[in-house]
Amino acid sequence: MHEKRFNREIERLRDPDRIARLEVARVVELVLAGLEDTKTFLDIGTGSGLFAEQFAAKGFEVTGLDANPEMIPAAQMFVPTAQFRIGVAEKLPFDDHSFDILFMGLLLHEVDDLERALSEASRVMKRRIAILEWPHEVGEFGPPLEHRLSVEKIASAAKEAGLKMYQQERLDHLVLYILEK
Image (cartoon, rainbow, N blue to C red; front, side, top):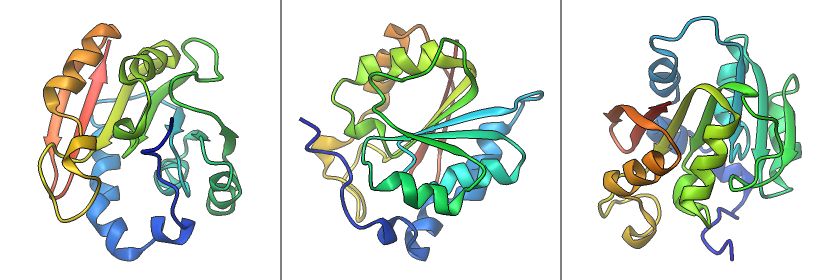
C-alpha cells in the first residue's frame, strides 16, 4: 500500500528546474480564473508547500495535508501562516464544505483509491477542485506510464464523485484539470 507515494528528499521538491516544469504562476492563475470571493484553500499532498505558498501570498487562508510526516515541518517553514496536517486524500480530516478551492498537485496518480479521493475532495469543497497531473504519455520526467492517469479515468472518477470537468488545460509538461459540482 502507498508504494507510489513520493518519498524522496524534500530538497528535490524545491529544485528550480522542477519548479519551472510545474509552471506555478500559470497554474495559480488558471485555478483562480473566474472565481471571486474565495478565501480558503486546501493543498492535498502539499509536499514542501510550493503551491500553498503561492496561494498564501495571494491572501488565502491555507491548509495543507500530506501523508508523509516529514513534509509537514518543511511546508511550515516555507508557509508559516498556513496550517499543515498529516493525512491522506482518501480520508480528509475536515468537515463538509470546508474549503473554497482544493488543489491536488501531482498527487492523484499516487492515491490508493482514485474514486474515494475525489469523493472526499467533493465532500469538503465549496467551489472548485484543481488537479495538476502528468499527461498519460511516456515522458522524460515523472512516473512511469502505468502510474499515470488518462483523461477518461479522471473524468469517470470525477463523475462518480458528482463532479464535472469544468476545464482541462494542457501545460508544457503537465495537465491541469478543474472540476466543479
